[in-house]
Length: 219
Image (cartoon, rainbow, N blue to C red; front, side, top):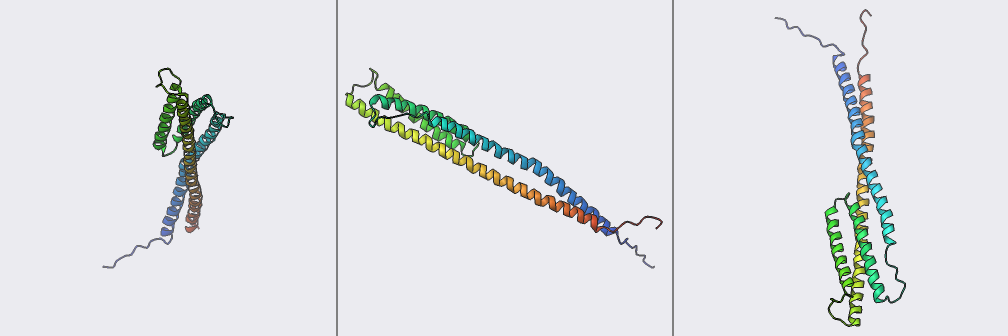
């Protein structure tokens, strides 16, 4: 019995390849568009939000810095030291609040919260000890001893204020690092979308050009 072979039309494979590449290119273009609009725009918004938070932080911290004590005397009096302790306490409280507001956007928020609480507790203790030094109920001490105590608290208060400023710098540095990281992600997504978009169009055009021209009936 003779076997009959059915010939496949010459352009059958070409037609399937044409459609495959055209479909593949269209899918890549569509997926790239969705990714760019979704992921890319979201990253862009995140970077913008971080930038706005940093700018607001800088404005607020400049105002807080101006609230520090103004000590003109080379050797401050007891009263001047007590006023400085009160001013530094207020400044530290403001800085801690500003620091924690910015810390909400960074990964190390809990660490910064813990440091801010420690600064607050220490500043409050210094303020309490300073304010009680003039109370009648305060343990009997000579004027020299009270002056020495206030001087000690004055130094501790100044150091506590410095800790708040260091925390401020650390939070700001962390926020800037986060912004740079998100900007890098955004650039990666943007340039990847450009490459994939170009590739998608190339594959689509290749698919369109790879098929053989169709022949009309009757020709």
